[in-house]
Image 1 (cartoon, rainbow, N blue to C red):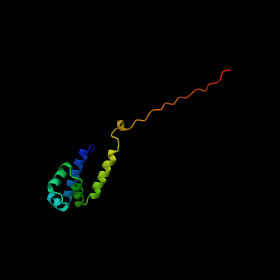
Image 2: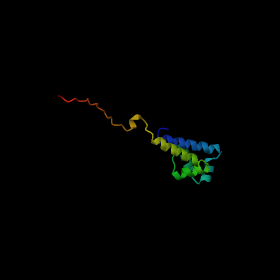
Image 3: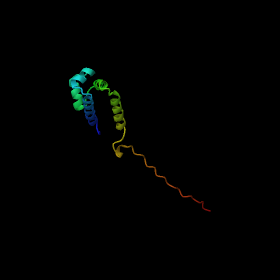
Image 4: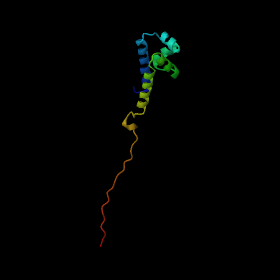
Length: 105
């Protein structure tokens, strides 16, 4: 997953898989979660929904902890630089060695 859109798509696909794993229809999940079936359909297709709808669906599927883990991982990945160019550059300090000077007599 390289973008928020990818993460949303993955989340929607994962929720559909979990719903199918327990052999529920979207209508059954809507009844159990209190989320309209149109919202569940959109969530599965696009991964987009309100935070409350996402958590209600995850709770109904008994996958609330898994969603939390997913969000923590996305947050961790968001803090990792995509490339070396994204890293802050360190200032190069050049050290100069001074020759020892002997006094003139």
